[in-house]
Image 1 (tube, rainbow, N blue to C red):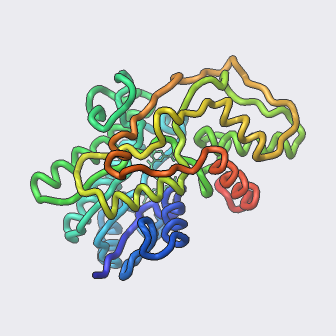
Image 2 (image 1 turned 180 degrees about the horizontal axis):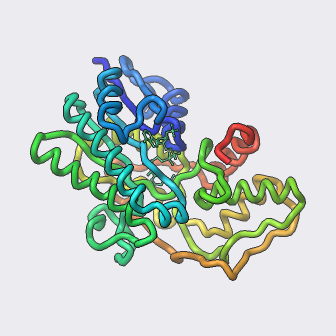
Length: 322
Ligand code: NDP
């Protein structure tokens, strides 16, 4: 049987990682390409998914049987706070167009990507899949978070009214090759890698904002890619699944910075600016549902994944998003 898998946002951090796994895992293996399968990785230049006509044209062109929906307006704290309506509106439009075109084209399955930012601000930890709607999200990113929450609502409504097989995945903090390494608007790992690289190059101190004490769960993009492929092949329920390393694999920001210093080979002055805010100390998410359903998964050790990411950044500095 021939399947066409369309990956929206196929040119971003997660999309590139899925392409890497599809291209490199042995054909026919659990995460490898299957016989008769075609993978399409779409960018915004092929179709601006905020526009229903362009979205429909994309579906008409490829006739996808399966969709991994990653495309989103994403950004760091500053952008999220400044452009709340744009984050709300663009993401609502993208998600609504992608899901409705999938319904109209009788797409067999859609997996959309949420984020742990969608969870309530005041919540009992660890986060799990049942807590998405149990309180308002943090006000700093309420536009993005509400738009993403609505995907879960839409998935349920499409299933109840039309029997669609739409579901969603909730990754924790992702990092890997092809990330956004912009100094102002990136996530913590790519931002610190870029900063450390510049400190080494310019022989200046490497200063990490905050105390370094907060703990976070980081997932390597290549591992996340395998988990998406597992969901595509083996998961058929509307309820979301958290895709993350375990709660016992939290890493402190200091451990992240230490690993970056090692991987970059930085030998200069390295300090923490404790006048800067730390953010929440922990916000652990449970991966119990994932591991129970999958029967176990071997995550890439953090230091190894970080080495791969730093090596990619150094080799691709001039083409990277910086
Ligand atoms: P990136 O910013 O790396 O990539 C975003 C992708 O979306 C790009 O391919 C971009 O296309 C595409 N895109 C953006 N706007 C549009 C549009 N209007 N029409 C069509 N395509 C568009 O994001 P990530 O790979 O990091 O994120 C992928 C998904 O994972 C997102 O849904 C995000 O919310 C989620 N996520 C990410 C986390 C992280 O830590 N990075 C954590 C949790 C969830 P183009 O290249 O052409 O601009």
